[in-house]
Image 1 (cartoon, one colour):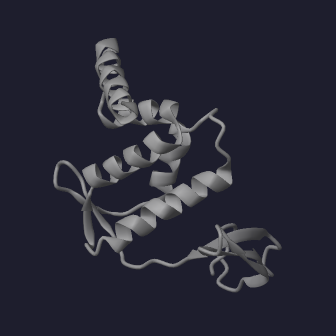
Image 2 (cartoon, rainbow, N blue to C red):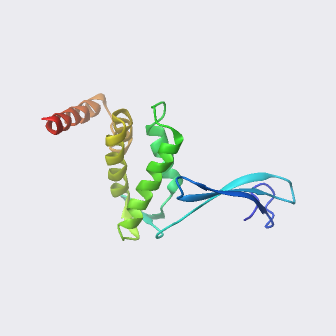
Image 3 (cartoon, rainbow, N blue to C red):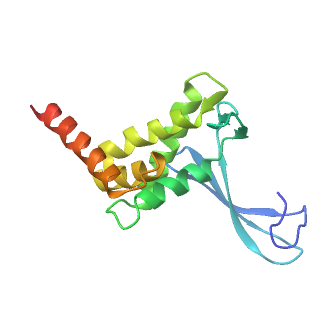
Length: 156
């Protein structure tokens, strides 16, 4: 592993332990060249995913982008970082398990929406406002109206 500080190829593992409920390995490393310490994570990848954007561009799946968007939706909500990591891991595993190497950004967005709808209604609306590109207050009103109708149908 290359040192992120000095670029040396000779780094040493000082400590390894399971992380993310055993879905990853956390390694503490040090660089003998510059003395810096840093952490790396190893994760199992079932398959390399390519995201097909709405304009048909193809980009590699970016787990950190997924995690960042979920963290933004859940900002200041009562959900801890471990739970967010489990959510991201679950979504990534679900996408990899679908058997396709290419997945649309729309499918990823819908998967996140389903997950957030069950977890936290405020985060769900926040994510939907960006994902569905709300431009005016009436867009929120229409979405919230459809949300309350589906909740009423679920309860009735």
